[in-house]
Image 1 (cartoon, each protein chain N blue to C red):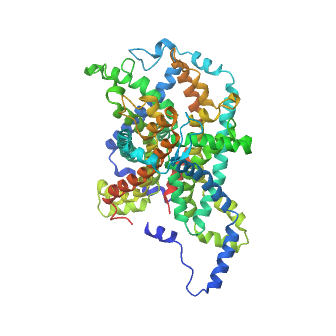
Image 2: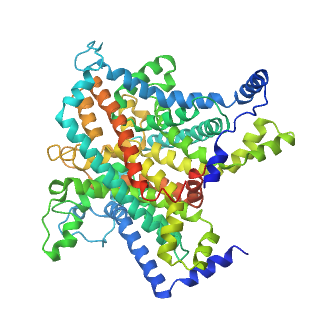
Image 3: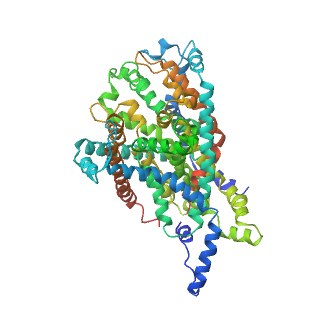
Amino acid sequence: MSTVQTAERPTPAPASMTPEMKKAVRRTGWVRRAPLMPALIFAILVTQLPFLLTIFYSLQSWNLVRPGSSEFVGLANYVNVFADSTFRGAALRTILITGGCVLIAMLFGVLLAILLDRPFRGRGVVRTLLITPFLVMPVAGALLWKTTIFDPLFGLLNFVLSPFGVDSVAWVSQYPMAAVITALVWQWTPFMMLLVLAGLQSQGKDVLEASATDGANRWQTFRWVTLPHLRRYIELGLLLGSIYVVNTFDTIYMMTQGGPGTSTTNLPFYLYQRAFLGFDVGQAAALGVVTVIGTIIVATVAMRLIFRSFSREDS
Amino acid sequence: MSTAAPGHRRRRLLARPGRTLAEVLTLLIALVVAFPLYWMVLSAVKHPGEIQSSAPRPWTTAPTWDNFRRVLQVEGLGGYLLNSVVVALAVVVLSLFLSFLAAVALTRFRFRGRTVLAVMLLVAQMVPVEALTIPLFFLMRSVGGVVPQLGLNHLGSLVLVHLAFSLPFAIWMLRGFVAAVPRELEEAATLDGASRFRFTWQVLFPLVAPGLVAMSVLSFIHAWNDFLFARTFIISATENQTLPMAILVFFSPEGNDWGAIMAGSTLLTIPVLVFFVLVQRHLVSGLAGAVKG
């Protein structure tokens, strides 16, 4: 694995080159790469423009209710954000929802990927069944959970649990966080499973053979051979999963509307309330920027913590 | 086949009862996971009175097509479908082309700030969409002043905004694939007299095909399922609305038509499912490649 990384690293130009030679190499280099750069520049432009726009708006006081009220106010919006106790609560819940969903989904994903890694009759069908939550529109998925499974009167969960004396629990209003996280885990497990499965299938069979020959049992092989190999796949899954789950909106909008009270209001939903119900564009933009920075910090710290345990064997 | 032998032996190492148990367990989990989807299809063919019942039955004795009929009778549905297909395909084709070229540029060329650019792409993806919707609305209005086809009320605005949200992910995925293609291959192609253009399109492009497949699945799902932007950008031009908007008709303050909503959701899921089944074999190897390098 380390060889791949070193091969990737740019090799410095040989020291024997004179500055003129280097300059010439660089010039021909730019001529050769010119045809490809427009695509990159366009991609950067299209993806960064909305972000830059957000930063710009976050420095403005701009409420849509008062036309022409737009003016530069510096960091005032940010001061408001941090003074806002609803924001702090929403930030905490965002971490809880994201962390809970991504970790549980990854756990299930690894388990299912291991089960799916061996050929058996009907594997294609089972794999397709397992992937379906990923294919349903998030709006429809959340609706399905709320109305057909968690509903206190008509819900399937109460119906199934009724022999055990549980039959009138209003799941979404009594356990709002658990309900939201359950629906999200359901939606995200397939993605994690696919990534880990990809990792398992890219593992060389000879390595497993060798470890079996050396007398390792199945758990030892998994712990010391397979798991380190899967590390990059798990890492990528957690990273990409977090980026998407942090921005969860549809599920919360459809299931709880952030409630009861603010008990499931995460940052995107709070932001939506500020922007679309309060029409406060500047404040919402500042919230967005803070969310991004928060995401980066939390993701970095979480990654370090999670991978400290088995980072020594790899890299 | 020498590769088949070790796999065969490994399978025999597992005890038979354990294997059967694992297979049964997998099947059970798969059924539980897919159950809400089954319930969606089931509700779509149930009579309205049967959907909300305190004793829900996991089957129906009198399936009906009435719910689907009501969905198919929504005015302008054909146009909505066409719009959805046009937007999703345009996003897939454009992001395929752009993300491939951008990934090659980002992987093959060394230039100052390369890593910063790659990270910036990912950071842009972290901005909550809700924070961007209003700024993007004004941006699209200005764009529409210059190029009407890309502005509000036009499908172009949807293509542009979905492109912006699927490109970063696509470029990140393809980076791994491009990096995995050995440099010697390019040198060999150059020695054989192939131009850089020919090398990029005739050698590199087919080699990263699994990645392109995985990437196009994700962009397709993203564009197809979009609700928020279709709702915000297409305000007055109803002829330019997309398919998810058709389901909105069945939500009303007097009571939602659950049968039609479920039938509509079922119809919306079918194209994604078909697209996925067609490419699923390549998807796993596609995701595997994304991590290399």
